[in-house]
Length: 393
Image (cartoon, rainbow, N blue to C red; front, side):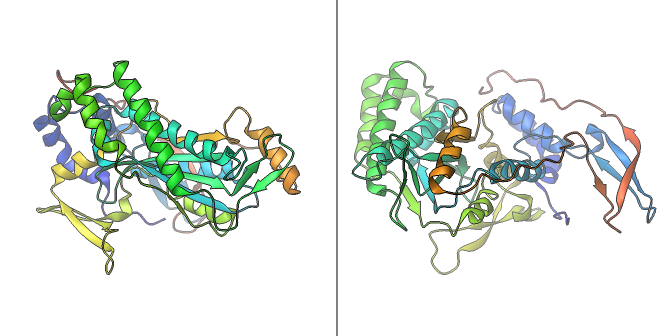
């Protein structure tokens, strides 16, 4: 596998120490920990092992990964394993891609309230889908959905939204029939948008009354209920962006699409072009441009790091969730029932034993297996610098 010439880790190693000092007291503990992990990833700091190929006698050194979920180098394997686990759960029906996006005003508030607002985004998007799908005027079925959180736009700006992958149909309320949607049409997006807007604003108001929201900087005045009500009033009138893309060609196309969305955070190393005295140059998509969508952008190294760290998730927050028929508690039984109604056999079970703790290292010169000849212990454990007074949580 070819390695990119420039990586996010290179940017953090070159500019991170000085920027951390300049931002003393303004970076959260989570952001500092992500920086430290990415800087140390696959370096001598984390230890590693020496490898030797018995076929061509090539010798190599492989350093250990940080395994941080925000690290661009540690996501490919996790995404591949997740997709392999989901492969046998796909049904032989059309699949649809739905997106629920928070308005810019709410997204700005979400920056200091990630746990609360990202949770509401997940739960209310799922509730909206399941409610409208269950309505006999639309589909009249119990559906399943897999939702994936994205917090970034192509230019690394803060843009919270969830992508949903949904089969084109569901189980009837009594569980005796598979109810398919019209070919090429899932649910009316205008109806989804209005219900999502109403329920989200109701939940946001409840969170404010319960004292669950933090208001800092330009939002400090919103602590007062009257000011918060005035702030929410325009949100009740504007359109919230919810849409459904055309159906995928089939289950395998769903997997191909998911592989680009499930475990990617902010930017991949492949999009980086250069790091020089001007800053960091990377490729991005300008969706508003009709003639030339693919462009390059150059940001100062400090601004690039700031934008990347906007997307550090709260500790323990799950960015892939399953709802309805796909909820963990009943997923196995629901999928079995759906297959029976669709008259398709259950997927073949792999009877080969899985060696979870074994790793095969392949020689990049001749393709033969490589043997470990030495192990290097970590120089130090991954840790963030001491938390500075006044840093956001």
